[in-house]
Amino acid sequence: MMIPRAKPATSTPVAAKADKYKTLKLEDFIKDRDYTGACTVLKWNRNSGEASKDLLEWLAYSSFHLGNYKDAQDVLQELTANPDKYEENKDYHTYVACCMFYQGMYQEAEVEAQKGTSSQLQNRLLFHIAHKSNDESKLMHFHQKLQDNIEDQEAIDVYKRILMDSREYLALNVYIALCYYKLDYYDISQEVLNVYLQANPKSAISINLKACNHFRLYNGKAAEQELKQLQDLISSSPSNFGNELMQHNMVVFRNGENALQVLPPLLYIIPEARLNLVIYYLRNDEVQEAYNLIKDVDPSTPQEYTLKGVVNATYGQLHESREHIKMAQQYFQLVGASASECDTIAGRQCMASCFFLLRNFEDVMIYLNSIKGYFENDDDFHWNYGVAKACNSDFREGEASLLAIQNEKYKAEYCYLSWLARCYIMNGKARLAWELYLKMETSSESFNLLQLIANDCYKTGAFFYSAKAFDVLERLDPNPEYWDGKRGACVGVFRQVVAGQEPKDILRDVINMLRNTNNPQVDVIIRIIKKWSKDNDMGH
Image (cartoon, rainbow, N blue to C red; front, side, top):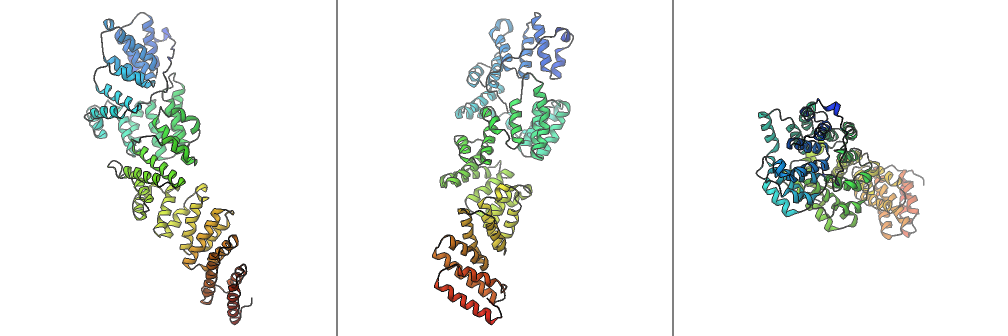
């Protein structure tokens, strides 16, 4: 992927040190990728009176690879402006367009590229310009012309065949590693990449890819450690090539730290910056900001479709919008059912999300079970898995999965507490559900949890805790339905005591709860309980 700069780069002066470079050969600098040294030699030769076509071509080449795109553009335009002196070569126009592209000058780059010779480079450049300009018709036109090229075939197989014939093409290992990275084979990607890094340990692109592999294989700290090498390279280079990419990835590796400072200026430079800023907003419950940032994005990659699905699902749930929920379901289905993603972890997550929104929890479990082994320590997975299990009436596994969540923020949410309470009750642990309520502060959510406990405990025969919940509800809201529930639960407890299923001393609490209600039926029930207690040697 080419990473253009936000604005035209200014030229970087290079001090000529004639004595040092007189005896050094240009080929040595190019071979060692020392483009600063190459530029110094070429500029010294140029200032000494040499101005051949080869010298200018190498100067443009070295400046471009150093990241001095404006310098490279100026040299190439000198060649195009003097066709009689340097021989006309229309490829120069394509090269100038590449320099403009890297400076963010997309319109100028397109005009200049059209002057060049028709070639694969020209076509791919125009393809990237169309993408940056959001010109769908041109994008499809140039993409169609790419279909027959070697790049769009099964890339890894093609690269491997080339390497078998030309093992000196070490850089192909980087492309193979990139392909494996895209396929989520991060360990294989790193193994292949190491072949190239052994020969070129200062390759910025390779170091960045290694850091990304470590992020996927291990964690952000491991990735950040690898990226420090790239940071040192950039700080010692006059071009700052790769600085934006390094800053972007550092935010990702640090789990969003400094996202608001780093990512906004990169929105139109690095495509992933927009996606990662959306993720940052979602993680910080700034759903509206996430929605505003992505609502006008026309998704073209699985990651963009998936993120639009997540944002629409979250926005739809927050605003009770069936339209957005339906859009989210469609986005997830597009990714999960696609031929390229259906057998990937992300694709199966999308299908699980699709069926979750459709409330088809049996199919949700089919997909979640197929990827469970990859998410042993993932709180988001445990949440979805636990709720889906509970919705399928598998409350034991639902409880286990919910209890595996470590995120304190999740554990404080009413949705978590209500599902865990239901699992406790259905698993015969009504006391634990009641303790969840006792830890809550008085609020509308605690009132809702009381209703859940009262009704679920009644259904499962946990009458004592049902009575306790109805008792509190009745005191908070003198609704006749709560008295009906409490009366039935208290009678249920009495019957369980008579049957020997509950201890006799629990009747004292039942009588105290009944006395909290001003209703003539209370005296009747209490008399019956007391008579039985007296007949069975219990004093009240």
